Amino acid sequence: MSTNSKKTPNTSLALEFKSSNFSVPVLALSSDDLITIEQQLQEKASVAPDFFKNLPVVIDLQASNKLECNIDIEALTAVIKKVGLLPIGIRGGNAQQNKQALNLLIPVYSVNHGVTTEEPQKQQTPAPTPETETRDTSTMLITQPIRSGQRIYATGDLIITAQVSSGAEIMAEGNIHVYNTLRGRASAGIQGNKDARIFCFDLQAELISIAGIYKVSEDIGASVRNKPVQIYLQNQALIIQDLLQHH
Amino acid sequence: MARIIVVTSGKGGVGKTTTSAAIAMGLAKKGHKTAVIDFDVGLRNLDLIMGCERRVVYDFVNVINGEATLNQALIRDKNCNLLYILPASQTRDKDALSQEGVGKILEELKKDFKYIVCDSPAGIEKGAHLAMYFADDAFIVTNPEVSSVRDSDRMLGILSSKSRRAEQNEEPIKEYLLLSRYSPDRVKLGEMLSLEDVQDILSLHLLGVIPESKSVLNASNSGMPVILDEKSDAGQAYADIVDRYLGEERPHRFIDEDKGFFRKLFGGK
Image (cartoon, rainbow over all chains, first blue to last red; front, side, top):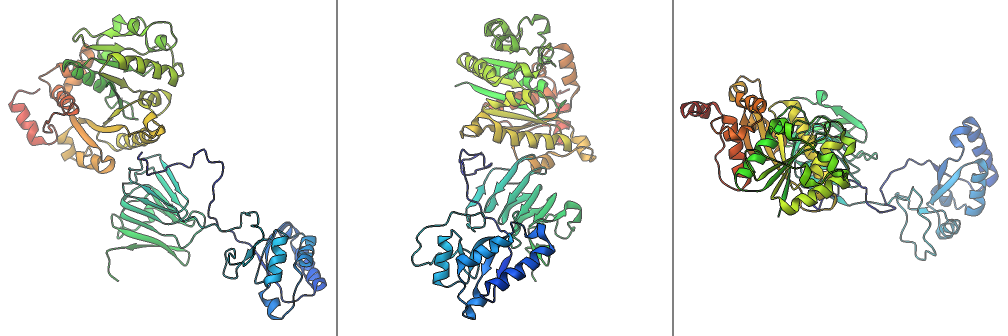
């Protein structure tokens, strides 16, 4: 294997940052009445205690702050924890609330997702929780053929300039580009990224999958077989599009 | 600098031992001191193909275990004094081989020999793994049919990820394709994959096509590597392969029927 292709992540590194998406419930508050909040939370939790036990939540303060209820974060998190939920972040808070949260080692998220970084004076970086979205943009490039029985996993995009044999398996958390014949299995967006795509010069794959939605060779129509295509998700369906066909 | 060649395929019965014997003999005949090692511990065959089965005293496993020296175990070929055979043990299994032991023997052979040909057993288990682990060059023997091609592809994957060169991030093993038991007539009838079909899947450097030939069976039965049968088509194919490997230009033969016709005309069997 050439040196520019890292194949298996079996390096001696003890840790690795990976990009991952989690689905976390957001607790949107529209009142500062902690007693009412606690009551209503208890009611909800009693419906499905197993579900709510140790459930991570992000506290959304946008609505409550619009109503100018300046909720005290320390008191609020105490209430939430009492009910059995685990606050793992806040968003939409004001400067004082954000500061309070960080003092409690609760990360501050921006309203449009992601951890806020433009905090003017951050005293300390909160310990990275798994929910911290670290964007891994590293691209893996492979110039050697991927043979039957080989498995490739890329944490970002995966670009392969040689062929992928039948019986080989290529996986990427991002997009997959194969500038050659794709005969093996290809899975893009393997951690759930539904916007990931697969591109290949010559589609003869055994299986293609994006974010877990797959098609096997049998289900790939003759009209796109042996053609340069792109594959993407649209309304939970895999679309295989002939790249040379004009629309 | 000595070079270690592994003759491998993944699948069994495709002609690895026939090829190992022919190639080793061809290299020795060209004046290079060559050793050929049978890695098929427990299913020893190379000695039969080389016609030295009655002279086996010590074997590969004896040397690994320190029960015999390398010189005691190496058998000099009766047809060519530059060729030596290291037979496998018939009474042991593949677990008798260790990476350390194999590595030590190869290092010792490298001091004295120009080429070391390792005849791999079928499969991808320990014997096959050790046969390819230290290789510099790999001869992939493939038959023109789908299961053989897939197994070769799998073997190529192992060569490029599990060999010493791969593990130490050195220049990868050089891989060559030897397409054996090829019959242009049957390709035409659609009974066999064509050379193009095989190359489409493997995309390897083609070292040569060996035609399906009665001479191979005759050679095996008489314990003479087929390359010594200079009149036979398979013998000539292996001679071409050795020449090409040593860097000489030889046009490819035995690929289509027309050439087969000329071959008949000019006295090939």
